[in-house]
Length: 231
Length: 242
Image (cartoon, rainbow over all chains, first blue to last red; front, side, top):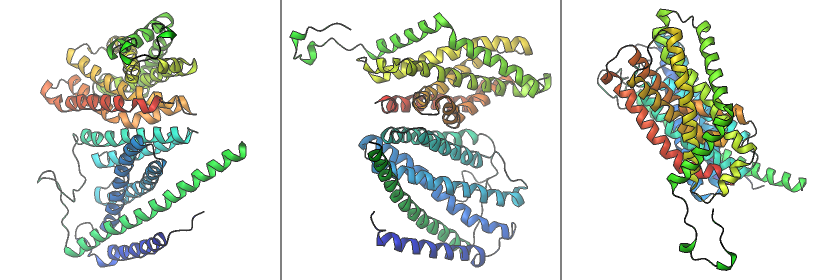
């Protein structure tokens, strides 16, 4: 087994530090929001996890396409890593959002476009793992996985568009579609906490994906060894 | 296929018997599926009985009285079609796989997309046959007129989108260990846009909305159909290759 690369070790330490700093910024540094109060602090991590969650799904769909073209197993490992890490982060986003929604909207859940799309996307990627689990041949597993991430990547934006037909109550942070939408305004200290959370979760995301890719390589080795023994 | 004399090898590509066109090959597969189905009625009868049972269950589950009926008819119909659809999609691909017909199809010297289009068109035909029976039955049972050209158009568009993705995914799910169980799990989350848009459009029409009011869900249905037929056409090769 290859020893852990030094860069990854450094990244591990950096991830822990930025997470700690981001927690401090969100909980203590950022001012308390006037209307929503303390619960608004959930928002920094909510956005952070949502951002990397989406990023991972886009990466997964793209690496799926690259896999189908190149048939290089490394892209498959990258795709699995991205989906797996994103599924967890996206779940965190939904939970954090619910914690915020309870006092703000007086309900844990509403069938708003963003929430529904998030739930559907999460289900697509759970289905993705079930699909992979049912296939023994690694090459076929990679092919089907790539096809399914591609379908999921195409379908999720359309889901969003369809549900947009209903009215939304989700606040828009960046790029409100029209002036009537509720827009959160942030003070400069809030912006510091906000952008640092985005940065922190991106670092953590890269770190976790790197670990997962290495794990994928080991899994493959174990599978090959098992085959050798059974022969 | 024509027999080629061994002595005539090596052959120049131009002297080989020409491959049947995509259209002809697709048509041949549809013909085979429909012929097999009309001999046994295995698939359509199962889908039909299942659909009627679903409607009966909805009747009791939702207490479909006059008031409720108006708002949920579109939802009940599309849920029924979606469930019956998975039943048919599963069966139609499973028969190919079980009897080794899929290998035969793959060996045929035709473009692989002909297999996709052939299976998709025959699946669509089965679904439309079921819908053609369910709609009048529902109309009679609940005294609503479902025979309107605009509504039938929505149902056709929705079924096309559903079958386009379903055929691709059923080709994948039959090759896995969990098979029948997996198809709805794979299909439903990806098909949510088409089902949502279809429910919205047909619900609007049934509620007496103007055609212009349901234009947005209708456009989404068309976009979904076009996009997913294109995607499925592009990736089907990867799903069936050995």
